[in-house]
Length: 223
View 1 (cartoon, rainbow, N blue to C red):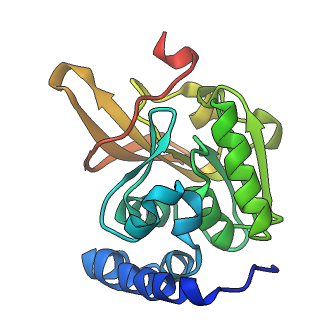
View 2 (view 1 turned 120 degrees about the horizontal axis):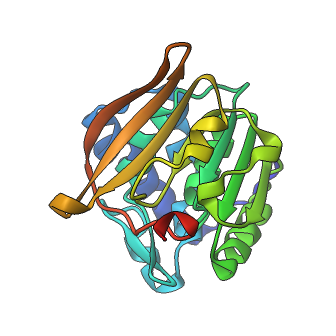
View 3 (view 1 turned 135 degrees about the vertical axis):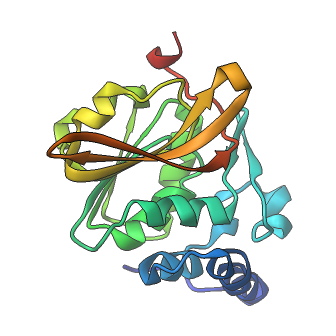
């Protein structure tokens, strides 16, 4: 794909991005070569507000407006790795947000479909992704808990907000042996846990990964 040239001012940011992939991601156990390549390639600083550019490659989330955040780089990489994607995969993202996770997915998968419920965020993300030259992404403004059935089934589905339960629409839209990576809100204990859900011939397999902290999922699922 065609990409804007790196300006001299971005050389330092490129160095920070490569160091991020090494120190924050690879050394913490993310080993999928396609994921690491995507994290080294996607310019995270273009997906955040200008006032936070100097923090773009630090080890933490950042605000992007509308009470939303761009996730910590390690979390983006780790969740992507759990999807087990390859170049032939079709993947669905629930919660476009800044578009950074979308770009990481688009570096790996053949087709990326992404759904966002906040119009301003979707517009902004679409502009950045278009300017970066991505042509394998389709987006929609809608309630993400409903998925995007028109393009199902998906080899992988990633949810970037904490849901009170696993949306049945999403598991229904998984391909056989498809993976759903989703943060679940455990309200009783005031915590969130990340799970990978696999669709098998015998049914749904659910595996706990680790505790996380995401913004809550919006839409009909919260009612």
